[in-house]
Image (tube, rainbow, N blue to C red):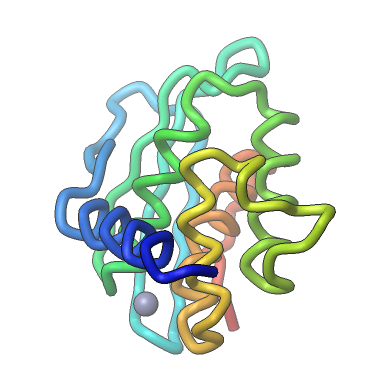
Length: 151
Ligand code: ZN
């Protein structure tokens, strides 16, 4: 990855970490899940409203490091309006990007704005900060009652 791109990625993550989007509650949510990353102390609650298989609204609240907040913020922007199965497919691709790094199966460019998460793969200690929101999303979509832990 060249340096201007890396700088851009860092800028987006810092921006979303400082001013997370969709950081709120959803009064009429019908799915939710909690996630916790004990390694860093990040915690998140994701709420969404699912209607006819479409994620009509999604928001999160929580506290933790900039990467965990930025990842959740980017997630809500990417997922809103998707069908449930599209969201689960995106989970698989983002999870592969974060844990295995960019590859021909998961080229970061194909993930649009979420490509910025590719930069996190270079910092193994921060990967769980970035995957937390995605595991929490999957749990919410699958109706999981138990809180998600990255450990
Ligand atoms: Zn963290």
